[in-house]
Amino acid sequence: MAQPAPQSQAEIRQRNLSRVLHAVAEAGPLSRAGVAGRIGLTRGAVSTMVDELLRAGLLVEQGPGRSGTVGRPGTQLLLSDRGPCGLGAEIGVDHLAVCVMDLRGQVRARLSQQAHNRQSEPGTVLDALSGLLRRAAEQTVAAGLRPAGLTVAVPGLVARGTTKVLRAPNLGWRDTDLGGLLPADLGPVVVENEANLGALGELWSGLWSEQERAPGSFVHVSAEIGIGAAVVVDGELLRGAHGFAGELGHMPVRPDGRPCTCGGRGCLETYAGEEAVLRAAGLRPGPAVRLGALTGRCEAGEPVALRAVRRAGTALGIALSGAVNLLDPEQVVIGGALARFGPWLLPPVRRELARRTTAAAGGRSTPVPVTASPLGPDGPLLGAARHAIRTTLDAPGGVA
Image 1: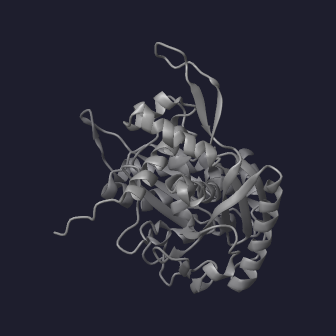
Image 2: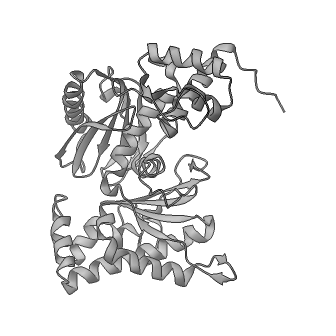
Image 3: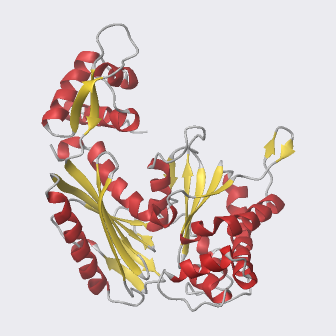
């Protein structure tokens, strides 16, 4: 087996600069000594790198903090809230959205609009999205921010390592390269499946309570008009051999059931997708605001609405049982538009998982925990923006 080539001094330096930034991102504010303790380098080496990152505008200093050690407390380091920022964008079937996020993970600008993207020409959709992106970027100029990268979430299969959407059934797109249709002056462009970005947004969000450990292995369901899923194993996204892992929405729950846009029959999406749930509740599918009407009906205890959501939960639980039995995750997280229906959706999901899966724990069988995402429908958009930020943290020399 060929041995990996040794790293150059420049590569080692970049890696260590990145380690400093990630340490501050994960545990800041930190002193130089605190950073050195976390990454295992000498204080002198860390101090040199910190000075470089301060000059580059990626770190800032604040007053001395409590160091927990004997001696004068060190100056505390934080990621800068000026300079590089990440742009996230989402292309939905019925909406477009963009947001700007600084290195601290704070959303500094956000814009969205309703749109009829199903069967629309990609160029038309990307023109509208580019307009939103430029408006959002302009809003941040006065705050001293500059775009360092753009990540776009799409409801479809993306060729690994490219900006090409191979298939997006709910948009009607095939073999569409988005790279040349987006602004070239916003930094490197990444196109990624929206369910994957929803899972990464969950993993990176820091929204889990201090009492609840963020799961390292979980299945994340992104439920909108379509239903996607992503699998995180030991803190890493499981992509599969071709990058297409997680197509939960096209898992058959009734093999001879309703026809699906993918060409199959009885897919989960035809029973638990947004449009299917609205129709079952007696509402005409349309703009996302109609889900607000469905929420109101569920809160009022309307039987037809409750039955529609509960049936969706049953179908979702059936589909998830296969994934849980195969992957043994720590947790299942329901995101996307259906996350708002947690009080009525989650009980049937849990019931099906309890019936169809087993996990030995202390000599008894316990179903995997199922929760609604705290990010809700914002998961893919926030995950996209945070993905763009992490590109800067991973390669700080690229923007210095």
